[in-house]
Length: 333
Image 1 (cartoon, rainbow, N blue to C red):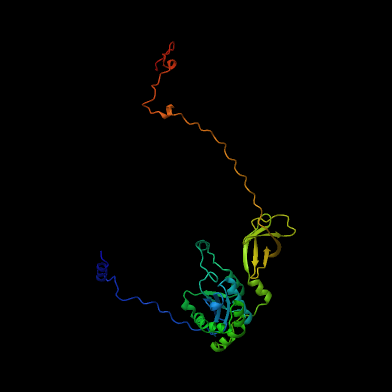
Image 2: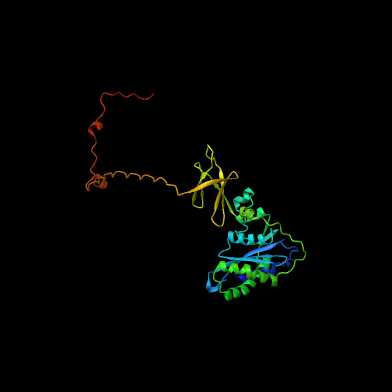
């Protein structure tokens, strides 16, 4: 039937509404009252260096109460890029209370069906770093929810690009140096303002040693019976010391830093190791080829090649066809 006919029937049954449904009204959220109570983090992909260099991602951190901004430029929005700008914020101001991000796998991810069945809460590497610092991660469901950092992106895309062009900056390293020494201080002096309440909610600043133990990638790897751990295509031979027996279904904690340094921990104790080349795998012996079997072909006049019409009549065997003489037969009872 025609769609107009169906529409008229639905109108008659009061199943069709002429009025369009409006979007749900979202009330504007007020700023937080204290500095360090909530900080928004997001990455902005843009042609920051224009034709002088490659495209990049500017990692922005904006305080919700004061609009204080800290930024760093890199190639992609990776774990190390997010950890680098967060570490710079902690060194400057201290440990913040909460971090407002989006649903990228770098910050937070949803549980898989298997994790939902086990009741396990998934934690990313960046989320584990924040857990050690006591920072709560809040994931926004829309760009409008973290509109403060999105508006800061627009300011940087207008002002920062022109200043980088004037300075003729063509690399990420030079851009980060300019951001730290000149641009961010001038930007905060112009756009930042005091919080509603004077209390600072930042925690104490961790030492460099504590930050190194926090900002690292931690991965559990199974230990083979010969004390070899495989990690990212590399084979690490552990030297556990005076241990008589091999590990039985044990796991080691492999810690990796941004500079490529690796440490291995077994039962919360650091274990020395040496990197091995890829182990030589035994080459399977080739299966011997089967001997060729001679197949004899039937001749053209062979009976198998003849039809039943051309077959010779079967001659009965005289021995079998001869009557049995001298053998008694008995009738069954």
